Length: 232
Ligand code: ADP
Ligand code: 5GP
Image 1: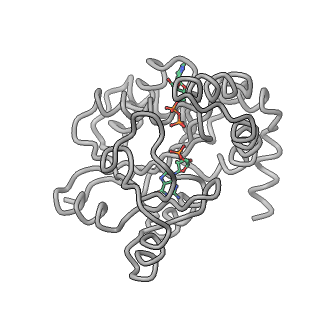
Image 2: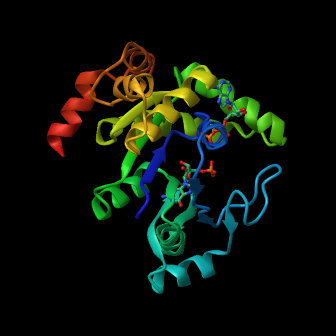
């Protein structure tokens, strides 16, 4: 039986990797697709664990050979999901999580309409900035320009939120992880009432209080998102 493909996107620094690790601890049978990237390893990252780190030449050769389900240029580097990861999960009948940016997510939504998409957002730009700073301090590379770029990109990415099935605010980690677990179990048809309610409240069209508040802090009105949807 084919597994479910989960697409997860979030502005950089929202806590997506942290949340995904937590959910994989809570839920069995969720494989994670290790992307290819041309960026340099950060902090304690290891080749083949967080990413397959590669050269631009090799990445371009993989594009030419048609080896990617999707790829995109993000912050000046290439990132891509290898078709091999999808084939592998399919063979094993396992669910697969793709942690990809909005450009890549839109490609996958078109190619694989059955995929379940989840957008993770931080509760406010202030919290996002703090998380970006904490992370770069921990990694010993605070670069103002990078932080500024990621903050301004975040608001643009939020305008695509309505294209995702679910939108989850990562404020308290345990709450967000439990909501994401609810989504995964519900999509598997294995959710009890509590999980189904959690999933329902996270639907991007349900406009929960947490989602409305976060969009307000980013000064993205629900109307902005709707207007954008009508234009496209
Ligand atoms: P992303 O994968 O979205 O770029 P990370 O998972 O690297 O983000 O998280 C960015 C920073 O925010 C890290 O220092 C992480 O420990 C912290 N963080 C993640 N989620 C939370 C949360 N719910 N509350 C507080 N800090 C968080
Ligand atoms: P980071 O460099 O912070 O790990 O990731 C930067 C951005 O690239 C994040 O938004 C992340 O989701 C995205 N990303 C990681 N892997 C892929 C991928 O395979 N494809 C696409 N399109 N984006 C990716």
